[in-house]
Length: 165
Length: 344
Image (cartoon, rainbow over all chains, first blue to last red):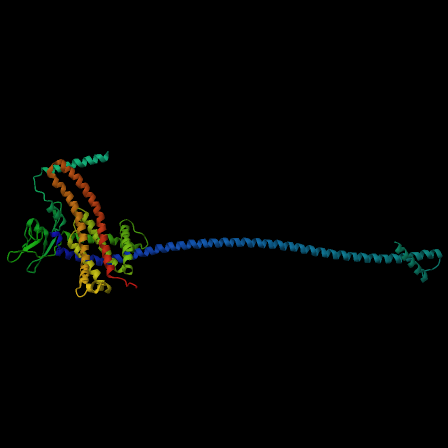
């Protein structure tokens, strides 16, 4: 049967055609196709990997941001409290200082009043002594102002009066 | 309702055809001749009742080369002493007569129908693959669409799912051969399924073609075979009395070296031939039964056509499977010939 006998001519041409097409494809087609498929697969793999990493990083960053925000809020609160405390302290201090000052002023005033009083008393005493002597002079028609004993007596009497008061 | 209408129309048409056939003058219908004429090779490519003339290249017994059109031999004509043998050992082939008037077969490198079909297949293969290559050069990171996408998927499947897992690091070295093998066989098979001109040649169902493919695989396997592979053949690890003094195992192993490609050759040849044969037989049935009257012929036509279409659809699957199997077995033979050094 002709079909089962290899035909020389056909074998020859088949060999030629197959080797030529093998050479052409092996040189120009398959390396390009295989390389491209592999490159694209790698590209896609890397894209996926990159996306995954980016997502992870985003999550991390989000956590960090939350942390930062919480920290900031805490710090803000703390600083507010600090300010409040400082304010209170300042006011307290001012108040204390003011009261100390006031007390001092009061004391000074007291002192000056006492002084004035004492001076006034002395003045009055002198005046009263003088007046008394003048009155007594008038009564006695005699000059008593030169008499030391009289002056002493008056002083004594005034002392008594004062101590009575 | 429409479908029923189609069916009735088809049946009546078939009956009509059957009637026509039945009324023709009784030419004895020889299915065997017809089938083998369709499966075999021819010098011109006949389409309908015409024939595309193809070049005939022969070398006569005097060592002279002749190149002429096959149209000069049509209808049993003789040209330069060459004619197509009507019967005998060389039936259907170009023969000449030597000095003694004896019939002899010259060296025949004619571009027959199958050779032209081979060229067409090679061309189709380039036409399928090079647009993809161009695409990659233009847009390296874009996925191709349609036909290009289909080719890419197939290459990806074969390369990444089969060649790389089997051959590992050496995949790049053998991939071009294996992929060419697969696509060439696939294109040949599919072109064989087309009924008219660019296809229709029974290529992979021709033993010359599968012989060349098997020889290529044989050469690739044995040239790339490592030392361990040859050692396994000539000095396998079996009890010594099996290989010395009578080299029983080496002979069996050596036999195996040749049976592997022969099995490849026969497998592809028989499968593709079988597919064509079944379809042709089913169609021939119509003409065999045509002699039995219109009704039988009509019914046979319907049944035959339905079965033939079914077989063609299965044949498409077989085309792919056979190409795949041929390539897969070639890969396996290469892998077996290049054993990795096994760690103890």
